[in-house]
Image 1 (cartoon, rainbow, N blue to C red):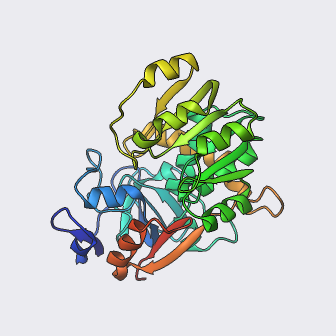
Image 2 (image 1 turned 90 degrees about the horizontal axis):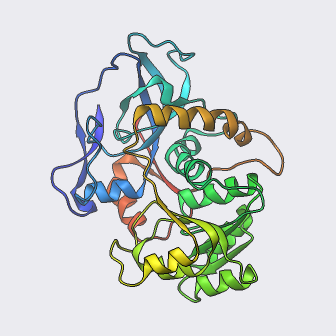
Length: 332
């Protein structure tokens, strides 16, 4: 099969398509013929040599995919049959023509969605769902500050926060991104390049601050985050795009807010946790992708590239211009 490959860590120019052995499904696994896969920041970090796959995971890039069931491994008990369309959360391997996955991690593709739209759901939406509900314990009436509001996770989190009865606020780096975030349901958006999002958040919340912060930035935002966190608020850190080093009185500021700083990653979680997450998401959230009405959920796609243009796709993601997901189409 054809797969995205790189021989040594470095820039997008190191990526190419390589013929590799097609995997075989093991006990309880399904072989998926991949139609589309989406890019994630983790792919860029792995390509740069900064984020190794978890033990036992494929070293091929790709944390999510959509396609059709091609083969069932021994002992597959579930509802899946050869030919069924499905989308899947992966620890790696999605940017190839075939990938194996535990059957319990497959999700049905909601009616009316294309393969490219479906490929944009698993990693981003399961991450957003996990951060809001399992980690951040969002409640109706909460205010939620979502950094990188126009990213894949950000566009999902806005819609899921609204569905939970919370008020989403976002940060982003351009007016266009803020407008799209507000169309998706953000109550307000702050351009971090032009204003202090912390002061703007405090002004909007009449000094109270936000109950929950979803933060993929880290280091460079710590002081502003603590400043606009409400008393007893939860600050959930799930990325370090703004660096890992801080300098200053983080603990004292957090202590006086009685704030909780919680960290979370999805990729290294064990199979049992991911099964629980996929089951909860499939039951509670998935139906809303195909129901008409104000609560309808929508994966946001920015661009679709043929997988042969993998270098261009990585280069584009590195410009930080994308709104929503960048998707790769695999040859059929």
